[in-house]
Image (cartoon, rainbow, N blue to C red; front, side, top):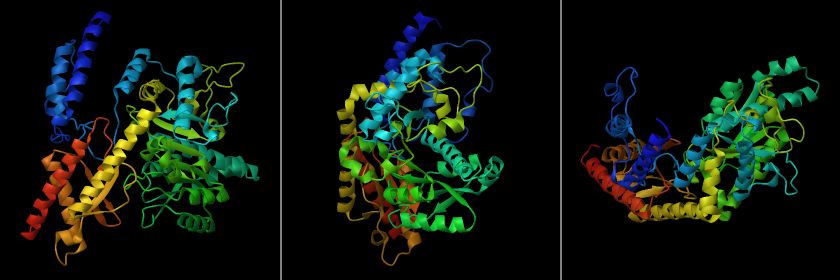
Length: 499
């Protein structure tokens, strides 16, 4: 394919993409294929001779499209949103055009410097403390800074490595030998709650440290009291607390941990304090949500995903550290073929030392496009619209009388369940759980909307995550209609003695 052919096919692709989004709500949101369907439809070896664009395009429609769950549909309410926007796609097109492997400044100075600038833009947009900035107000280099990771999981593992490094340095400063510090690593323990994303546990496994999973309170939050008690217990057992993760908007319920309390314990115990705001961090673009985040100013690192709720195509996970020293020291490995810039390097960052891989895409471009083409006002409107829709959904479910809201609706997530008394008189907890599990199953079978259930302290509940870029109130109204219709059928069948 030469440039002329690419020009022709590229224009066709733009039409295909635009048509897809204009008709997306007319398609069932969830794929209905069975496991292994594609293996039966595609040859088991790559072609030896070139094939045409038309043949591949036709296969996309006939073979790939049936196996796609449409995350960008306005009728997709599962897990958390994975935002798309046309400005973000345009930025990705430029990134693909350059196809740079930006592991250090020399690779492409613009790729490094734009990321530094855009991450400072974003930090200011969400109201982060100035210590997370790469560039101070006077133009001097800051001690902290931001970097774009592929996911919150990558961010979590990256800062856990930095936290381990910092604890080793601390032990050395107290007279421990380097050999002893290495041996003591197996006693390092990280603290998470039963609502923390699983990436924290995975990270601890990868770096060879222990994890202490703590029980959340009745509001599904990790509290200062619980953390303090666990640290005291572990120190008595000879363990070394080194890391704690607080969450601003948990996956299950969008709960907010006791961030000020966690920060207090972390400071007293010399633990690295990381805040995972993968989903709800986008809401901090709106000043009215910032009081909920009190305590993040004390964190050693903070992360959220613009690719979840801030109109930026996957992948784009924003991570900031208040002091980059331990992060860079723990991940920097010198090779002669990876030269560093000589002379004034105040604003030259080798981002390969801020992440796990060596190579990295020019992801700052799509974030730059989104922030410029929407502006702060457009991003705030996007967030507030979804919060208003979630509040409306909450009221509709409450006014119906058969449902109860399980956790406060703060952002775009509504967690509810069918009430026990709606299921029947003198029903047991298992009966109520069965009704709610049946509701999710019926919704999946119906396939007009998509959502998922979860379990909270033994109770099966239903989650509706509102946040699609192109979703409207009509989609939320359809969700109410489907939920109410299928609940009526479940309760009717329950009265008949079966579900």
